[in-house]
Image (cartoon, rainbow, N blue to C red; front, side, top):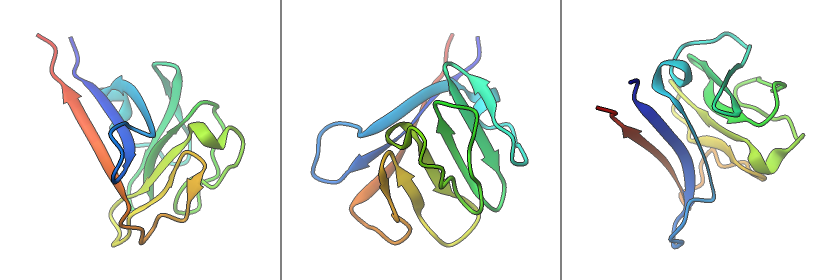
Length: 111
């Protein structure tokens, strides 16, 4: 069986993830251009030099990160390959230089 990834965001000082989603590593980390791929009830994208993230619907607005506001409380978008943090964790946006949030990635190897 393929490994499963849990990707989410945590506001420092809290004891729970604000937002997270699970997916098969092979699908989540396969590179896309601007299109999203459906995996485990979420739509995922991984665009090198831009961002990685997920959305509950298939439409994302990628400039550097997903700025679409439809279902914004269920979207996560992090910058990658650039010297900048994440753009959003749910409806909290403009996290590029915010040190109050943490990016979390957990991998479950299935045997």
